[in-house]
Image 1 (cartoon, rainbow, N blue to C red):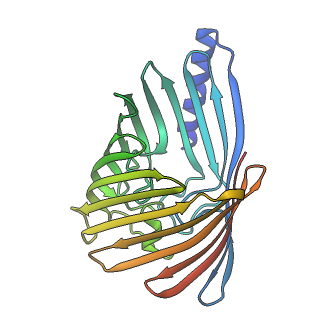
Image 2: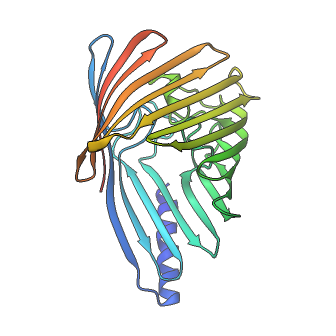
Length: 292
């Protein structure tokens, strides 16, 4: 990964020098810090969300020739992870007229990221179509016994369809993390071969509704039908109650969460959360989120 990062940076600098472009940069942090207490009253301070979102420090470099480079460093990784690299993302991007291309390590296109969230090394092409619709397609490989294949999503921010075909899909801890539970430990070489998904996002008055359905087939894991639904209210004073539920229909597994997002100003928000497995209490979190 260090070689890939150095190659991307060297290539971007060469392009800026060749084009006579003056580079710009942007540095910041995404914080997902939480205090977790489980049913046994064990408390932990973690720097990633229960949905597999990392806290990171990131650097973006922009050139006037439409090339840019993005780096993101994890502030904390999962235990016994299948992705031991400390670099979360490292890719070079070119912005064309109505399209863009990326090369490096990045999040793969699939749904709205409620279920299948896959980090992989490869190439991605995004083409804008009519209105707000776009086609995203990526070819990626993380190496032997790890995730690889073709990922594709077609649609808009409000409605889309996705497909992924390859090897060991959904194997990482960022994929299906909420329904699987934080104690889930994947095995190398064991994942799905085919994922089919539909996603929807709709605003109705002061409510926001999101949902995804993902069918997982053809792998070394049992076939699964994942359903994810989330509803939130937008109330005055930055107060947003949230209810989320996820299920693996075939395994009869259900997890749901009641939360409140409280914006406290300065780009910071607090998320007190209570998580249940079916009707049993599983854990409580006090999460702090910020981007700056």
